[in-house]
Length: 340
Image (cartoon, rainbow, N blue to C red; front, top):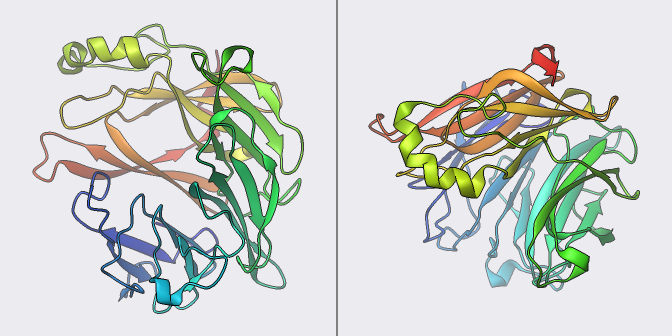
């Protein structure tokens, strides 16, 4: 994990089956402020606590950790806080709660971090999902998580909001262009069969619908990317279920949305083919197709920014590797985009 404001500040997470661990064990984390020359181990408030759906983010030396379960013991929690989001200002040696004032139920996801100059305070944008459909809200803190403000409910069911990780994207409310992938039911009926929808907006403004990326023709088709004979038979039935699934990769240069269409899920028994990246061009309001093949069999994607350059760090399943997982990266270059 790379710090959003300082690419020399990085964190390394170690653990067994970090992506599939049903025991929700806290990972071992090491941090470095000099691009890996020296490392320091993070000290957790209580190592015996579970950490289901654990995440970590860093901005200007502020380390944020969050999970679906409290990361602070009850004795360290204050009124109005759950301890599911915690922050450290000393490279993980001490922690404090950062979710005072947030709803105490529902899932939490930290979407973006920005350093505000000259104060040095960190501005945070987050999504809180209520336990009932249609209950997701967008919240923001402008004082390094000391207080939070709600900015209304998000449209659709099970929305997924993404914001650019580029620290220079501070226009229109401080976050640049936001995107949302959500489910929508016919006639607004909660029990109807769901379909997917995309929308875009600037912070605290109305959402505007945009079309989904063009559908793939088939797994091996031009719009879908490449495939191999080894993958074809294993993915034949899965293709019918996932050929139109949309996966949001992130917000790229120029605040353009980067997405995949027909992204097959990957596990130990099923592999997915490479896919070309679709880019939503905000100037022309059209989808453009990259010549770059996004690797197949990816199980985790982390966008990282440095001096206006976007790099995707990927965890890829490789059944021929002794460890089963390899680390790779891909640099996104807008010159490899062509109109389809």
